[in-house]
Image (tube, rainbow, N blue to C red; front, side, top):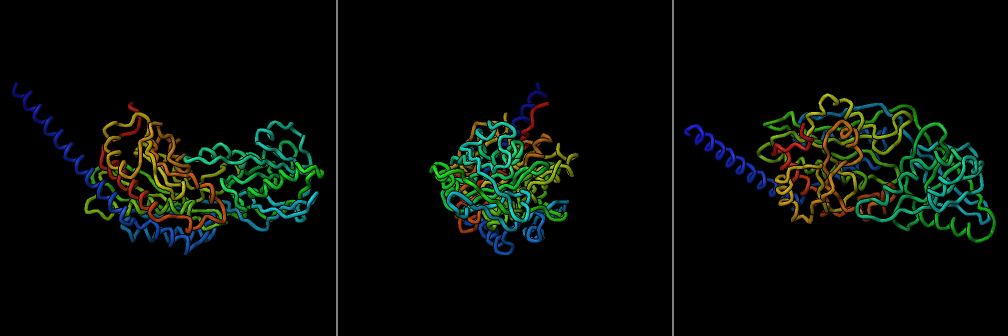
Length: 466
């Protein structure tokens, strides 16, 4: 009887201690949230990054210099184990790009070459336009039916808060040139994967490998112009494409890594971040200067606390997220490098997520399937005042750069941003800091810092029970 009473007392004491610890974690998370809302510093990071380095195409000196600067910032912010981890890369460059209607009404179109596209011969390529209203129309065309023609797909991208419209259309850009080439086409155009009606075009990666053809994106008004020309009854539309683009000599890109080391279970690591590289048309403020700033600013707030979290939180500014690579690797070179060099440590990775969806406010939290209800309730107690709700659909990805870690079994969580207008500027000349609202960045940092503290202080495991 006495031993039972002692065991019961010990259990009650343990429960009380855990409750007190949980209450303390909640108070700290709320304090981090409120501190970020007063001014998180994220906007200043984006401003400094985009002013000092402008666009940061993967493998270029601007990306490499930005990485060195990032490591300096990490050290200044008190992060530990700071490293710049380089890996080989084939860098792609944009040169001259031109598309024009030769007949029936000569005019120049506003276009941009797709990343990874091959160059045209010096005089360009000419051919009749085979215009398809949807991508499925192109796929339905028989092999050989486009011999000597230029395939044009004019399917638009629906606007959606979660980016689902882009997800449904992205295969047009990545696979479209290859599918057109299989049917005999000598060039490829698509309506930009954008949700606006302005006269500029969106770049983005296309598949690289044998059988590819010169590939371009059209501005939305120019896509509509081609439809009108096709339907005007003036005869076939004939185009000329010219591009001096392609892969440069081998180069390097890199991941920038820093962390706040846990004081109780330092071997248990939560990985967050964004990608440092950008396309060359704008300055990469939305994609993904905002993401690297949000996650770094959140970790800096935690680093500034008088106490350390129980678990380690590691921030990674991944390199080379944007550009495709020649086979066998098609993309995500930085994320693949991080995962491959830590394959034997994957079991100690608690969770992974990144911020790579612009600078809109966070509106939902998604956790892995089977997440502890008590932890979810604690997280929502802190996040609900920020206008965030719990998304019951389990998180299967934390963003593009988390994919290689997820493939190794690392659970992902997602702090979902409002991307309603993200694809108005994505991969365009308009991806500049002027499109960012500082208070939205502060809301993001508030959510990330508060959630990370709760996760790092907990003993929650998102992995399936053995």
